[in-house]
Image (cartoon, rainbow, N blue to C red; front, side):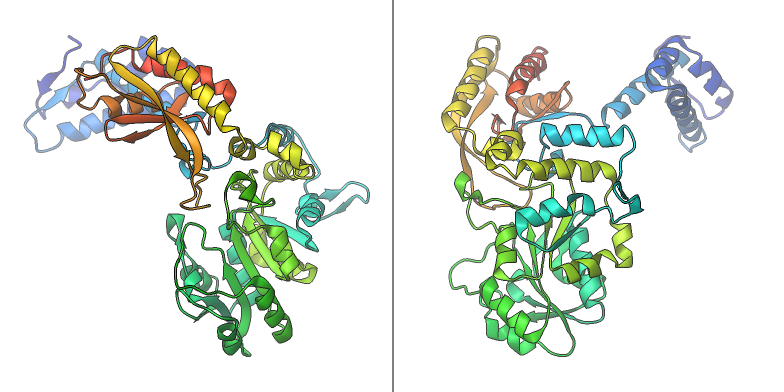
Length: 479
């Protein structure tokens, strides 16, 4: 039979190749060596079932591939499916904490610690000197207290989990007082009002969207008050005629009324980001110093560690949170704790943190160094590419991940456009797709008929693989 497809009538089910004959073909035997026999058998069975359904449908004919053509289609489908699994990406988007690309890359020290923990046993819940079982957050508690000034600490799977656990522990069936201006929605449809009610608390909004005063909180406090919640608005801003109390004022009120004051600072800054030209980002230690009872934040954003949610504050409240039944459902594993511990150790020496933690290194990179790298890449591409115009432009990079909105950092980018007189129909989109499918994958950003590649979030050792990927992606004609 020819490899070409031919129309088949509904009555030719007997012509369907068997799964056994397909997986015994040369092309699928080779696929099994690469992807495993179960994957190949499953794909072959699905392909045959799909053809059988089509033949049994009401259509008069279907296009039926020959057995060898069908085997090749199955092999290609497996390859595409395998290629869609998680793999390394060069982040040339200009967004340093790109949620779609896993947010903060970890320091080498953190990655090595995670690998060591993953490859063997470790004392995740065992105090080695005493031989007694302990709470796993104790592994990083001392470091977190040292860096934030808190009395105790607890770690969960992410900051959304930390928020929910705090609310469930302190305010189930009771009121949580929040300013109207902080009832926000962040990425993924995470809405503060819905989170509060989802964990059994009662929302008690105070003030207005743009102006809330200490007196508004004081007037709302009563026998049903479980907590006062302050939420950092992250990627939302109200400007102009605004007013809000400072943390010290709220902490004094909370202490007088014996109501816990809890602060969701979001992105988890342990240092002042003003040194990078970024302002208005709360720092965990400053919230503790101001008198906040519990502070919670992410580990995989500005902190630059693994995904987790960190809760620090007064010991009696942290212990209350840690003993809540939800705490077990939200707990982190040994790999996360090992990576977090290694990351926190770097913060003991600010110079080490700036050198080792990728996000901090990207933000502290001298602009002239970034410009030189970008121009070097542009020169190499110009001398090897045909049909494309390559230039460098002054640009902005953004931290991303819901942090520091509208605060761009000065940067340089490489811009690729179809050369004058060349075909432009779909060129840039096709090139961007080829780069995403390359090895390693490269993700830039498309603006109209421009492909923009930023090196601000690209490691220096990735410059060469990035150049090779672009050259390879432009070898074939693009129409």
